[in-house]
Image (cartoon, rainbow, N blue to C red):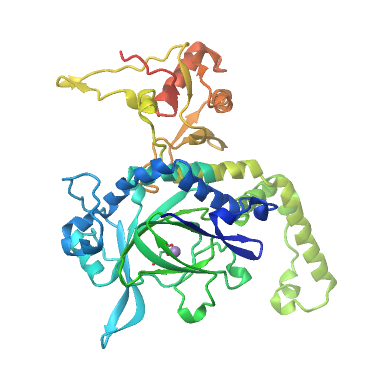
Length: 482
Ligand SMILES: O=C(O)CCC(=O)C(=O)O
Ligand SMILES: [Mn+2]
């Protein structure tokens, strides 16, 4: 019963595509990820490993188990429980907000939407009261509750090289929760339960194409004709690019539960330049006296908007000087260092990697609790010159050369909740950088500790042990426990 709808924009032309009619040739010739790339990714999730994906959807229901508390609401909701007998926990503070078509006036809905974000915990009884009164519920950060979503997003973040996030929306039958709007992310809407009627609109102006920020709520009067109108049913996927206006409403006979997976927030060339240009100017100021010379004493008199129509040789000279300094900035732009800084914040945004059972056994997590028989039990990690090691994943570390020294940023100690942990890094003696690069270039092959390009065997073993303890390195065979 699955179908894939995608709105794929190519240049100025949009195509509504069903998967069968999608031709790759229509999407070539662009730099950066074309919308085709995003769409292809969506198809890969859906069709490859589909069995695994769908069979694991059970765990998504965990998110909505608060339904258990209100049986009357379950009438139209199929009974699907992940783990019998487990009572839902309270959602953490800020885990839920709701929004609704509000206010009946003389029995008529007038379509005013309000966002309710009561402080404190989202208590099930309160949440269900909102729902029964026609509110949609938005559950933030499902990856913190659901291992499936965590796994799913952790793969996507690696694929996209940009943080992947998610929100889950539950809407009662016959209502619309959110006003039309556009978002600042690439959006993948996966219908989990029930149905939702969607209308999607192309950006209205050039300024709204691939926007850097999300829109405010829009009114129907501000919209033209939808470029896509469709009803999603459980298992369907809808992709729409950043900036496409969308609105979803429930049919009278079905509730809707969907998850929106998002990526590519603030990940444009302009966002990169926002980091790079101040750094370039900083370098130029340090290295080139031209940038430190004083401005002309009289420039306030002939420059400025009020003087912009005046013909004046001093104006021409001023403008040319600015242009030449800007052009010269290119030579000072620390492009690779700025990329490393973005990588560093990306690593902070990242979900920690999800480990398979065998990866766990081959990593520091294979070492059991260290409290035994009423006392601490020392489990030493014994890495020798013959131990075969590799990085757990290629994308989990980044070397950054910073003023304070060489830092190795890593994701393995991140939280499933966005930025709950500070950025994690190790300060490394610069002589260890070759070993990190060696591990990166050898990936996914194992290398023996003896082959790490450190000076002494002691250094090789202590570096490997440190990285193993942080969950960054795994061993080819589970280490013997001492
Ligand atoms: O379901 C809705 O009403 C809106 C959801 C939405 O805006 C989204 O998933 O991005
Ligand atoms: Mn949205």
